[in-house]
Length: 180
Image (cartoon, rainbow, N blue to C red; front, side, top):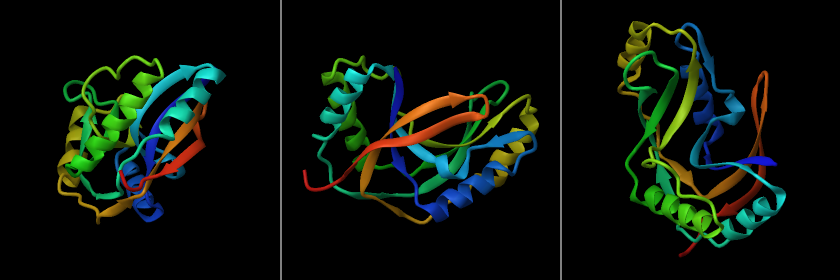
C-alpha cells in the first residue's frame, strides 16, 4: 500500500518565506521548508495497481498554465483550539478548473469523490496546545500577508510516508500544464 496526494509545488523563495512564518508562533511545528506545497487532492492509501492507474489517468489532465499568489492566513479549526495554521491563495478560476479535472480523473479511476468543498491552502505549521489568543495574535499580525504572483506550470503526484518525525513526501510523477 502507498499513501498518495496530488499537489502544486511552491517556488523555493516563497517556500522559505512561508516556512519562516510558520516559526513565528510559540509551540508551532512549522511545515518542513522542502515539503511546503498546495494539496490539490489527498488520495490516501492505495495498492500498487491502483497507483499505476492513477498515474495513467492523471497523465491525461489538460489545463493551461496560470499564476497564483498567497493571500492572508487562517487556522483549522475555525473555532476552538487551533491545530493548523495555513496561508490562503488568491481566487483563481484556473486553479478551480485544474482541481476539477484532477478530481474527475481520479473518480474515473474508481476513487470516491473528495468529501467536502475544495479549500485551497498551504499548511504553515501544526500546533499543539496553542492558546487561542496566541493563534489570534498570529492571524491578526499576518492577516495582510501577500506574495508576488508565481507561475503554476505543472502538478505532482506525491507518495507520503508517515514517520514518528513527521511525513516524508517523495515525488512519484509530475506533469506539465499546457494547452487544453
